[in-house]
Length: 244
Image (cartoon, rainbow, N blue to C red; front, side, top):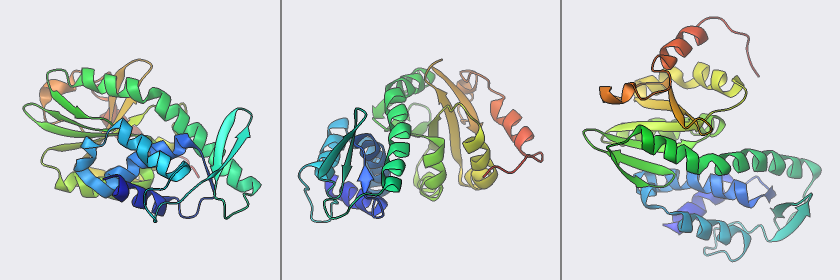
């Protein structure tokens, strides 16, 4: 399985020169979902480490990119291709991705715990793609709203294939910009495809519906604000200032 994920991740990083270990780990989760689909629920944290290792230390496939050169900047580690000379913009992009990935990884465990509590009474399997089973089945992929924006077609496609309900669980953000852009661009597509988007607040250990509700009506009362998705839809369908 690792080889398929490594090859997909190499495609995703084909235009990158500098990366961080944190970015590789988060993007490996997305690559696993794309390459393995629902088999990604069997992809462990140890598997992720092997994928990251292939990019930084010893490639396990000839199609793996190799960011072999390590650079320390203010206590942060970045890695770049041996065959390229990084520019300032390369490092700025890597830093931006590092900050986003670091925040997500630091909160992932609490995001999963929050979702487990929400699905109390359901059997849970998987890591970053978690399958919850009881009277209904839910596939829950943990990510950020900006990454969900990029992977919208992937999520819509998977929702159509899953025998159950497909949920994209995104971390709460300080600013609403990315959520507004996401809603205006993808909300109708996701509703047609049956993709739910729920916001996880790892600090409060709570879940709020952003797009879509579960068919299991017993779960609705477990949301922090069960009417949140309805309120958001009403607000964002009104004319708001375009956000770049």
